[in-house]
Amino acid sequence: AQSVTQPDIHITVSEGASLELRCNYSYGATPYLFWYVQSPGQGLQLLLKYFSGDTLVQGIKGFEAEFKRSQSSFNLRKPSVHWSDAAEYFCAVGAVRSQGNLIFGKGTKLSVKP
Amino acid sequence: NAGVTQTPKFRILKIGQSMTLQCTQDMNHNYMYWYRQDPGMGLKLIYYSVGAGITDKGEVPNGYNVSRSTTEDFPLRLELAAPSQTSVYFCASIQAGGNYEQYFGPGTRLTVT
Image (cartoon, each protein chain N blue to C red):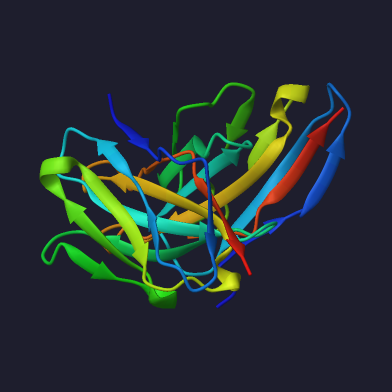
């Protein structure tokens, strides 16, 4: 079955510390992968996406993610977290022939300590 | 470009009432989607459309209906509201054949009591 797992429901990091949010997927076809961010009361904003090519992708706000096919993972990283990064983060997976339909993980809520 | 717009932002319904959530996009996107978001559950696809006149069910379609008479609009109809439909609803769109990035609206927060 197709699925996306974000193992961490809630993560707290100190401002300035590094961050890694985990995402594992199970998908029959060659996937394309997304990370979205949602601030409280807001819609979802795309951070970055992977379709093909270089497995390390750069996104907005200093985020990056690495696609590891052998591990079925697409982890999100940031070297130094800012207080404004506090939000909920969603990993999503789809495929070219899926009519654009995405499967979302349940999200990881990030809190940032001063 | 306004992108994807949704109205209303908030709504409280009584059990058994009906309402339509509006979604409009001005990017000439072919594909449009309706999701619901419940706490700790991520986003679940309700219905989607690949073009005017074409709609299909997603993962959680029960209790909802959609129509797509124009490229721009994709309204979601709740006929007999139930407490289980209390949720935040998001509309999204993409341009088919593009990079499949979904553009999201700001959401409608619906409470059924």
